[in-house]
Length: 139
Image (cartoon, rainbow, N blue to C red):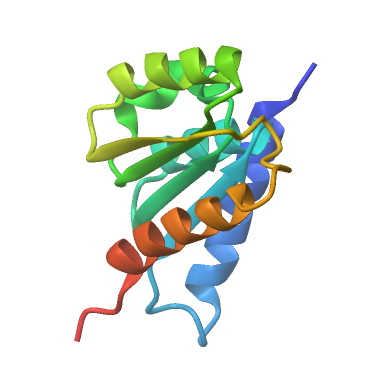
């Protein structure tokens, strides 16, 4: 079984370190999680939303964070492979529970690990745009 609570705890510890580190203290936090890591990222974003500017889930298992989804306030991007039918359903369910700004992207022709030619590049492009949009520095 997956210990999503432990993974979320570790993300929150990393966030505390980043916020205390002089080189990163003035930067917003963005979480990127793949598969079960996405559940942990969503849980961490809900448990301590301060300074969390964006969340990206790639082929994620947001169902593992279901009790926390309505508390996520950071803009959240869910990316799923078009051939990953069980995970599509999980992400559609999570999308309905999220009350924050959100977007669901289904990458055609991709399976769970996005191993098909060009599909991981599509993930990188979508995730990069999302993170740049919400993590850009405020002057």
